[in-house]
Image (tube, rainbow, N blue to C red; front, side, top):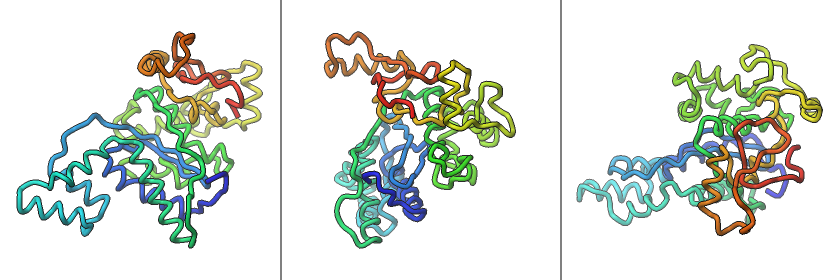
Amino acid sequence: MGGEKLLDDLGKEKLVQLLWPLATFCGVEVLTYCMMSNHFHLLVRIPPPAELSEEALLEKLTAFYGPQGAKTVLAQESLKQQGKIDAGIRASVEARQGDVSAFMSEFKQSFSRWYNGRNERFGTLWAERLTTVLVEDSPAALQTLAAYIDLNPVRAGLVADPKDYCHCGYAAALVGNRRIQQGLMSFLEPKDWPQAATAYRGLLFATADSANASDPQVLDPETIRAELARGGELGGGQVLRLRIRHFSDGVVLGSPEFVDRQFLRYRERFSPKRKNGARPIRGVPLPGISALRDLRVNAIG
């Protein structure tokens, strides 16, 4: 959006509303999200490919096009008459399964159509290119990225606690959004929501002294930077209150082993002089988390 803060509360809520049917349609699992005034963050998982049953295919069509949508009706008719959904319709749905580019393109275009219609405008809404980061599907990496995303409104100074920002995944989970609850529980140790909610809140407010304090003391960004500069110990929940460019521009994030594997997978895109992929996130204590890009300029804000 070119830095303009165009999204009011209704616009942010519309983004959330568009997210769920499209995620169902494209076979994407949303772990958490945050809708801000001029951008959004999504943490999604792409499940392994699986053959779609006729029932699952119809469910996807209904979620995206609605029960009276043309493709939904055609699928219902072919299923009734032939015992299976038309091959062309099946192919069009299967082609989008797990395709992050198709998912994001449709998400942004759908919102642009709604926004332009509501505001009697036309043309491009999203000025900047989509930035994607490949994240290791491990508890350490996902916990860090999820907490960073849910803390966006705190870093922006909108709220002191992400539970008070209704346009993020954490707040949605607390009021009963089962899909987000399941997404968060997928990388947290407790497998029932009340215990998982307590564990995740501990991550959001973790300090060097206690990760589970009932009334944690959160340092302001200036104090956090000063503590880091003098070599003081800080917990992840404190560090994640700083802007860390690696989480948007690091290309690949995860354990050093994971980042090195991705580097070798795309070895031809890098200089022959480069020997490995994993680069530390300089200046912040995030043990075990590396990035593919070695960012040194304005990396920590």
